[in-house]
Image 1: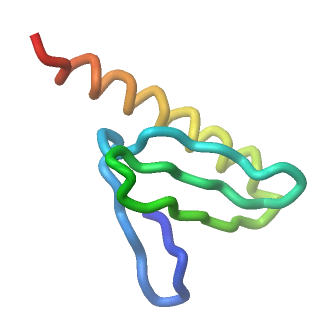
Image 2 (image 1 turned 180 degrees about the horizontal axis):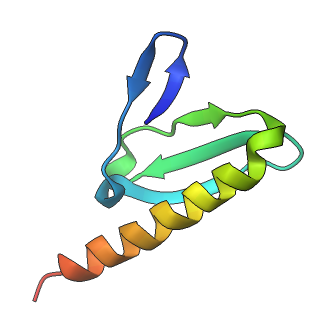
Length: 73
């Protein structure tokens, strides 16, 4: 669950995520979605960077697995 707003959240299926990137020098994660939908940016506490990096690595692996399992053909 990611939230760009104080009292709201946006959830993305791993199959919707095209790529993830940490912004240089700031605690900010950018998620690019497939099909040009949106490009959410999520800030986080710098002290949680290790946890966020592990979460992102897991998301990326799950996304690859999902796309392999659902590839045409």
